Amino acid sequence: MMKFLATLCFVYVGLIGNAVAIVEQEVDVTLTFEEVTAYLGNSATLECDYTISSGQDLPVTVTWKQGDGPRYAEEIFTCTGYTKEDKSCVNAQVTKIEYLNRLQIANSSPSLVFTKVEGEDNHNYWCQVAIEGSNMGEEQVDMKSVVLRVRGGHESPKLHSVTIEANSVGEEGADIQLDCDCTGSHCDDVAWFKGPTNDQHTEYDMVYTRTSGSRPTPTQYVPYGDWKGRASLSGNSLVITGLKASDAGRYWCEMRNAAMYGIGEVATDAKSTVVEIISENDRNVFTCEGKADGLYADPYQCNMYYECVMYVKYHRPCPTGTVFAPGHPLYACEHPVNVPAPCGTLKNN
Image (tube, rainbow, N blue to C red):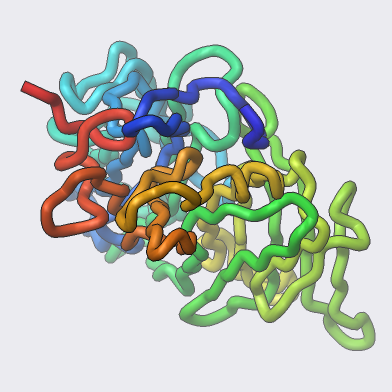
């Protein structure tokens, strides 16, 4: 294939008409709430769910962590072999003694249940979901955080929330901007990193950081590694120039309070987005020459399609959460459950 991906494992290839559709198994973690209030001695549930871009129900490992961002949070509970059909773990284990006999997975989702809340439980918790299998890439891992706010204990609220641009496609040699925003208080420092880069999902490649200074130290702007000379910030957003094939992968925008405030993990949040890189030849492979007016599948992206009008090509995006629906009588795009494979999960009778 001419498409450049950070990893080529777990890619499902199928046909849409006469086009080849490449569907990556990208994971996206979703939370119902980013802050949950609980009372001492009561139970509490941190709700978490996930989707896999292909719609397949692949076994995943759900790891709940506690701490100060994806790079530093410590594992407290693991659930292996989880599937949406079974809604249960093949193996489940509390991995931090402070939570022993007090944690379990919910009955209908990989949400984390505290059977008895204690005063020291007021922390930032991260729901991480990773597709199981060897040589999994960074696209197959995602996590998001929720703060458990304990009334009657050491009560601290979640101070801010990060939003990030949806997954995007860049062209080799071109520039790209990954938009990131932070709402709330103490959105002081930003760190952009890529990964995870190891099988334990604990290590990342730093891309760019902005660290607040205190007098007389000025604010520090630092690019890292292969991004030196190519990465910069526009506000909190990351700009990369001269895209390379190796730039493909999962990028994280992490916002945290400046070190001088010493607030801790409730003032840290991070979200991720997946970037795919295609070559100029890939972008130009589709042509409307000799084709009737109408809609045609993008051979590389399920959430994009081509429209041919008098032999002129237009590249159109589908609304968020939908994929191209070839042959649909009313709509160009539909939800994956209403579209056959490889881009959807509808089963043909």
